[in-house]
Image 1 (cartoon, rainbow, N blue to C red):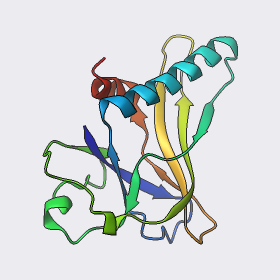
Image 2: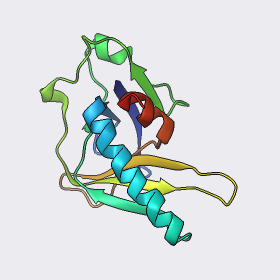
Image 3: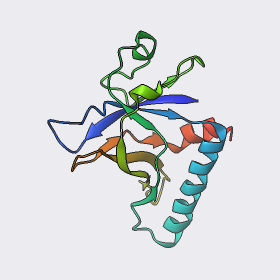
Length: 149
């Protein structure tokens, strides 16, 4: 499963051209993310006040609005968090990938006593910048779908 994620900046007026993130969510990657989600769920069972855990290393590639018409048609709308790319021929050309630092995958715990809710997002610092950009949050069931669970 390939996804294009909307990206949000801590800086209200500048995002260093990090407009979107491209995530190739194959079964292996989805399985690794689910292992991290399980770790958070196990920890929440012992420590209810846990809100998030960040893991080093990034997965998605961040990019600016491309000129490639094939890719542009798959960009999520303004009100959409992400879009699933169901065309196997679509990929992110290496030339469009932006340089980023301090890549983190963050697993958020939004669970209550009545309902369990865990979501995943990525945070990076664009190269030579002093702010962060964040992807939208992906629900656990989407990750499970990609993993074939």
